[in-house]
Length: 148
Length: 410
Image (cartoon, rainbow over all chains, first blue to last red; front, side):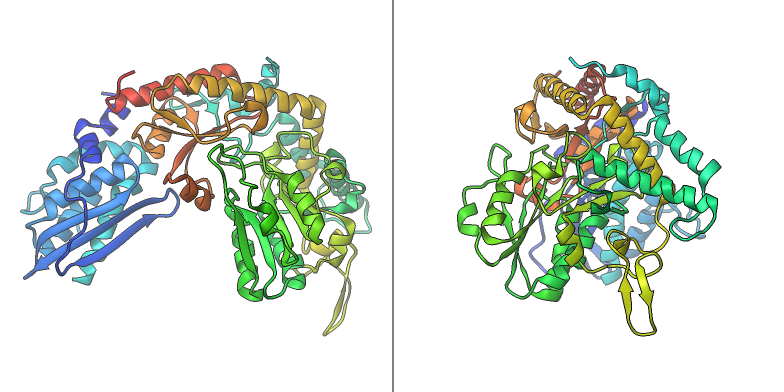
């Protein structure tokens, strides 16, 4: 498979064209926004959290296939997770992207660290300038979780 | 077709490969590649003439000063200025516009005055005026763009009154290639005694420029967009405008005398060139205008119109591709912005890059224009004298590959 075929996997294009949980939440929720000023990608996230568990999520934004698909796939895996599990997922995702998450290596087999479809984004690693696109939803998620 | 392909040998970088393909450089609106004549001039300056300017009483400093001032004379002659003293060297068009906004605007504008801009301006012709507005309470007023991607002049007569003190307009949009209505602006400004500033960053590199004919008050441009090194550019001003402008930076070189509490300025243009200037870069700028003059700016413009026309024709063959800009290649510049189906500009740029084709993707430092066009981002191919129709063909092949990767029919 060429690097480009690896980058633009079918599952990524599917999430780009049919983003899950697009919109905003009406009940009580946390809201966070992320922006890549250099390329103009925008991502916003609503999270409903009850008793430390993410019970609902909604996303909005505009940008490239990588940033928007990453966000859509992210909401698929974080709903139903605890805040701690969502943070672990974030670290697991960033490690997959080759992003430094500090000196706290995680056990990849622990519960909550299953990335599922998100593993399709591994191809982004070969395109260093695009890693920040894939990471935008996750930095936004961290901002949201910090408010919880 | 004006064949300039023999010039490609002068540009060493054009023979390199990118991602296993010959480099196809289509981002000259951002910065241009440098010919060996410019590289050699900079290198030779450092090897044989390097010293600081305007201060030493020794031979080397005198030679460096001659080289620096010689470059000023070349740049002046390139735009048909009356005297080299009408050229102020700056870091580029952005710093030139800041000089004007602060040096002239801050000292001559007062609350209620208006500065007229267009919606197609680069951020460098928007933000400095916003900064002045914060200090002086002036009002910024914008001309918009019509659906043919021309600056909409329909409301101009109502807009121009005694409150307007400055009209600052791009000579050519770096996004749509739209030519700014400079002559109309000059006439409108004269009727109320306003000044006209022309952002020539995309204009001066691509067509013959004659400031006598233009009759604006200021013209700014960047060296690096016309084959010269980065870090050097110019502000041309009418002598009386430069005289009535205050310096925006203080320091060495720009003074006649310095006391403990008051100082007197050096004459124009040194008044605006505080500190050690980018001397080698200026020498490179001189070599760049020599190169362009030898090719001939009419030839540069003709070649660019032809290649832009060819690109517009070939791009029209790509399904779902929208070009944001005037359709007549003879009435526009060589910056061609486009979108392709639902493929985001960054994805287009990544895919083309894998073919060795370098295009810009994003908002092009023109967010007000992007909002007006109602697009978050566009891809942009832009051309210069070293580009060929073969490279346009490569671009179109790459765009068909993008369609295929995104599962769209070819």
